[in-house]
Amino acid sequence: MEETLLDRTKHLISSVWAITERQLLRIIRHKVILVGQFGLPILLLIAFGFGLDSLLPGLFDYLVAGVMIMSVFFASQFSAFAIVNDREIGFQEEILVSSAPRIAIILGNSLSGAFRAFYQGIGVLVTGLLMAIFVKRGTMLFVTPLGALGIFISIIGLSVTIVFASLFVGGFMSLLSSLFRDSETYFLVTSIIAMPLFFTSDVIFPDNLAIVGLPLFNMHTLNPLNIATNALRFWLLPGSSWPIGFTFPILIILGIVFTIASTWLFQVTARQ
Image 1 (cartoon, rainbow, N blue to C red):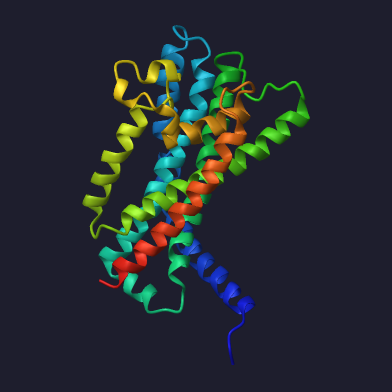
Image 2 (image 1 turned 135 degrees about the vertical axis):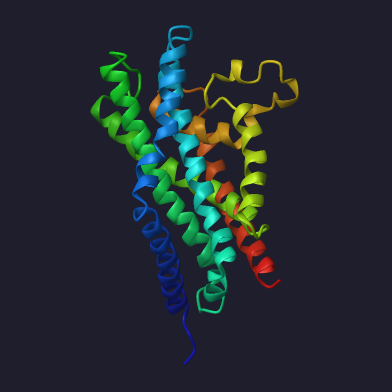
């Protein structure tokens, strides 16, 4: 009996969810990771947000979106690492001989990264709001002229943006993880790529300060971290200079492109 399009779609969805569920269970069983991954974001909020807010008023509110996207970035990095880890322990061969489509492996890891990035990003946001309200005694986050309706719309837009940003980063990291067969090489190369993007972006400081003395990196509009971060700032800080009509379509396009590219490269490397 010939398999219909509906049957293939159901099989793809079930395969994606099986891989996603496996990755989520691995995270849930490691309680230290669930709690410890908030350590660095909170440290950055305290060190930069409170330490420099007196010199640069409003920096704390500006920093919250940057720390959120940094959390999304690293969550997606560790989710894509599952491909390398499965290859090291020999589990990838079991997946490859199954009936699961190759794209399900990439989508499953990216989707688990999206779940992880979402709760981590929302956790950073809640922490930042509590710090701003009870420690700084004031915040501009979610202050919109539409009141409660504007806050509701901003939260929905923020959540969707986090998911698409994590799919983009997860696709990009999956592309890299398809190239390497050991964890040391993977983390070395991803760090070499991530650090220049991070330090030449406006994740922590406004764009007029992030690239001082670095004229070669003055094209910060092309930095994907800036695009993702300022997409979040559109919802967090009304009046953002980066329109959502520019940032959000780019995140969607990048997510689709890197998912397709990583799937193709994974198929090529899996045959070797």
